[in-house]
Structures are given as structure tokens and as C-alpha cells.
Amino acid sequence: MSAAQAVAVDLRDLTPFDADEVIAIDALHTGEHKPDYWRRVLTEFIPPSEGDRKVGIAAVSGGRIVGYLLGEVRAFEFGSEACGWIFSVGVDPELTRGGVASELLGEASRRFRSAGVTTVRTMVRRADVPVLSFFRARGFVGGSFYQLERDLEED
Image (cartoon, rainbow, N blue to C red):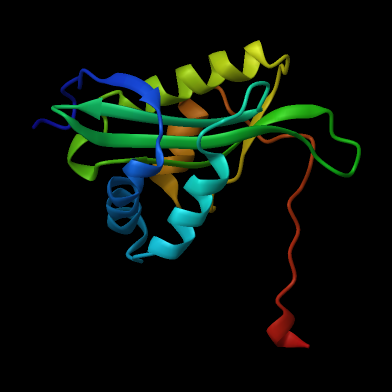
């Protein structure tokens, strides 16, 4: 498939039965196979209860999951108002630039708005230029908080 060819997808809620496909897509991006992590995350997020502010979306094409997005509405410490947080998005690398991630982000944004929040946040590694470019192209900019960290191995 051409990198610029649009991919038609159906969006639906993720289910626990989607774990293997999510694990496979994540492993293609990260180079790490993390089945225990993903099974725990999907168990915590699925199925959402009524009034739950968690978002787990699957993009399906040709009878298989070709992308996913996980997020939640949360009020963070440090004085942040409640906002939507996207903590994971992945698309089959063969289908990148086909609009799958944009479809997932659009649906997540609709769900966050219906939960009453007006801001969506995420974190991206500085060196992950494709993902950073994706979010920037969709209106994401540096926010009002700085993420700080310290390497404990240097102590």
C-alpha cells in the first residue's frame, strides 16, 4: 500500500480480546514484546463502566485491528484542570500516513469533549520525530507545564 493512500477503518471500543493485536502493533514500533503490560492495561481499561472517563479505541480494517488509542480524562496534580490524556497510540507501520491515527485522535477528541474537558495532552519523546510531527500537525503545541526528570542512577 502506498504511504499516502487513505485507509478506510471502522472505529470501535477495544476489548480484552484485542490484546494480541495491540501487543503486535506496539512491538513493531518499540521493538519490545510486552504482553504482560498490555494485558494489564487492557484489563484496567476494558470494559469501561458507565460514567467511566477512560478511552480505548480500535481502528479495524479488513477484519483486523490496524490501530489503537488509549487515554483517559484526569485531573493532574500541580493545579492542572481536568483534561484528556492520550497515553498510547499505535498504527500498523504498513498503514502509516493513511489517516488511521487521525481517525483515532478525532474519535478520542469527541469522547473527551463529551466528558466535559476542553484540553487534550500527551507526551512524546523528543527524538520521536514522526509522532511529534503527527501531533503538531493536528494542533498540539507545547503546554503550560514542563515535564522534568532525574536519572536516579547518577546518585
